Every structure is written in structure tokens, then in C-alpha cells.
Image 1 (tube, rainbow, N blue to C red):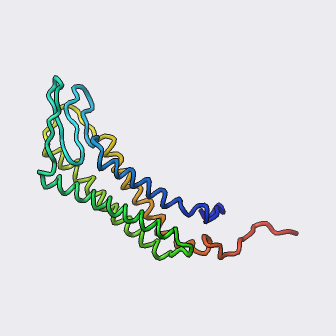
Image 2: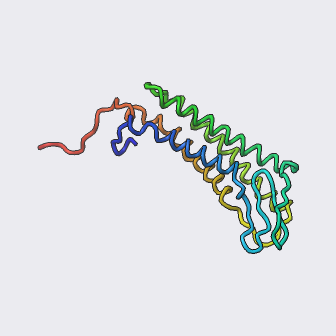
Image 3: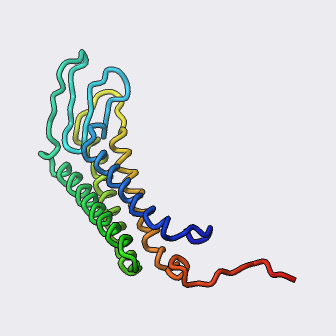
Length: 189
């Protein structure tokens, strides 16, 4: 935003917009049923953060079992949910911070720190789930971690990257607010 001379008033909503996209990806990850799916025929297994479903080789109805009956299932869901709630709080704080005419840069650095905490919680849930799922749930055939699990990782990566942006943004406070005289590299003879 600073190096290429983009106007602060036009670009001030980019970071909250990216946080909003991260919230949408987090909702998809929480609600999605595609955390784990059978990769090859017969498609006999699928799972979400909340439940594991399987069916016989001939097809038929899915029989689902809640993962909340396992301690690791509750831990994975709780840590990912805490990370998501922190992300939503950061989104609300970013909207407030960027809506104020006099931008509070220390406030923005705090949002960045909170985003790093959210990323830690999200990654903890995203690591607990596959490790314990693959060891404690019986699976047949070849299975893969699928699209909803990918949205979870995308959310965690966005939390880390946006945390860096929010933490580094106060270093360019004067340039962003227009308090620095522009430097020209061309001098007339």
C-alpha cells in the first residue's frame, strides 16, 4: 500500500475485507462435511469436524457417529472453534479500527497479536484432528482429507499472514497518513 503510492483512503478496507474472507472460509470449514472422504470406489466413509459417517460397500444409508464422544474430538472442535471466535473478534475490531478517522496504530498491532493467537488455536485443532482420527477411527480403502479441511488450513494461513500485516502496518504510520514529504529521485539540472 505504501511503496506504490496507493491512497490510504481507498486501501484502508483491504485488511478488514481479507479478514471477512477468512471468517467466511472458517464458517465453511466448521459447517462442511468434507473433512475426510473416501478417495476411491466404494465411497464408504466421510467425516466432518463433528461426526464420522460410514456405509456398507453396496451403498445404502449413511450411519453417523458423533466425534464429540471422543476426548480428542472435543479438543479438536474446541480449539478450532476458539480460533474461529478470535478471528471473528479480530474482524469486528478491524472494522471499528478502520472506521475511525484517526487510525489507532497501537490498536492495529493488538489485532495482529490476537490473530497470531487465533492461528495457534486453529492449527492445534487442525493437527489434533487428522492425527487422532487416523489412529482411532477404523477406515477402509483410501481416504483423503478433503475440501472443508483445506478451508480450515486456508483460514489458519490467512490468520498468520494477516497477523504479520496488522503487526507491520504501524511501522509505516507516517507514510500511510501522509505526514511524510515525498522523495523524488529525479533532480532537475
